[in-house]
Amino acid sequence: MRQTSPTARRRRLGAELRRFREAAGLTSYEAAERLGWASNSKISRIENGRISVTWSDVAAMLDLYGAGPGETRDRLITLARRSKEKSWWQPYSDLLDKEYATVIDLETAASGLRIFQALAIPGLLQTPDYARTIITRSGPLDLDEAEVERRVELRMQRQAILSMDGRLALWVVLDEAALRRVIGGPEIMREQLVHLTEEARHCNVTIQVIPYSVGPHASLPGSFGIFSFPESQDRDVVFVDTLAGTLFLDREADVQAATLGFDHLCASALGIAESADLISAIAESFR
Image (cartoon, rainbow, N blue to C red; front, side):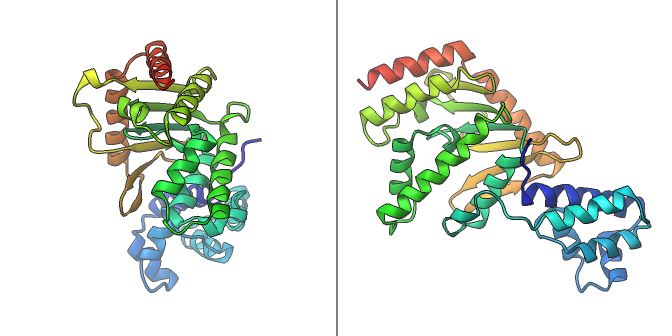
């Protein structure tokens, strides 16, 4: 059975509450005012899945929107209650900021994930030694050995999503720079690239490479990803990594722009077989 996550449940609940509000002909400001809430920002945060909501608040919102007793009302109230359940990663919660926890929650619930990475291999495809080097060199500077190993362990546990009955369809486009940047030394790089070729053989993993020869391409500014979900009412979510943290975008215009950009990247990249050949050739160069 596909696991769900608090983030995914909040987003699904929020999307349905938004539909009920709009069907009732109410703006978020009007709804907040009639509910006696100090600000309409609470409505917005609930509808965007950014905060948990009590079942009593959901019941009050549904009363206002004219959604009487029935299966849909019961389902949404149950969803509100379940949105407070703990995720599988809770034992590692002391290691996670809010953005990282959200990424893991979305991974857990997603059916598809498209990623472009310019300078490094994505966490879902990293080997332990490669991950350890990344965490040691680019993470907090004061980590002791035990904390580093827990972070590596968490990253490896995240990868289980790829082997659970093909639960997550992963499509990765890499700039050639991500394959040639030496992380941890030649031996670690070779092991990492061999691992990539092995993962690419799985039916739910697609890897393409944009070679240097292409020159400028659609995402020179940086890396990003797009989560898709099995439920049709769940909107795609774009995430963009920045120095200030991870941005999550789900406006239709943002999703369309990211999707178009990813399609252009795929068109610029080598085909799947040619990408595998290039990865293998670069792996051999690290001997």
